[in-house]
View (cartoon, rainbow, N blue to C red):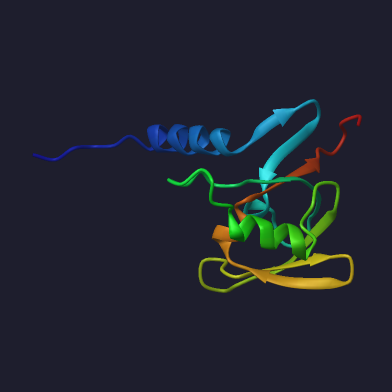
Length: 119
C-alpha cells in the first residue's frame, strides 16, 4: 500500500514548525542565535537555562556563556557558519569572536528588529 503526501501539506507543516520557533513581540522577533543568518546583527534578550533532573545543580554551560559576555542587551553578529550543517557558528561580540556549537547558540535568545517596524 502506498501513502501519498500532498506537497501543500508539507509546506503547511514547515510553516507551522517555523511559527513555533519565532515569537512576535511588539515589532520585535525573539529568535535563537542559532537561527540568525550570516552578517545579521541582533541584541541578546536572555540565556536559557535547561531544566535538569537536579534542580539545585547550576547550569554550567549557561553560566559560562554569561561569563564570556553573552548577557542581555549585548549586540551580537553572526560572522559565518560551518560548511556542513552550519556547525560551528562564528559569532562576534564587540571585538571578540567566539565559535559556538548550534546547541550552545540555541540557548541564547535574541531580538532582531523587523525592518519597517517602529521601536
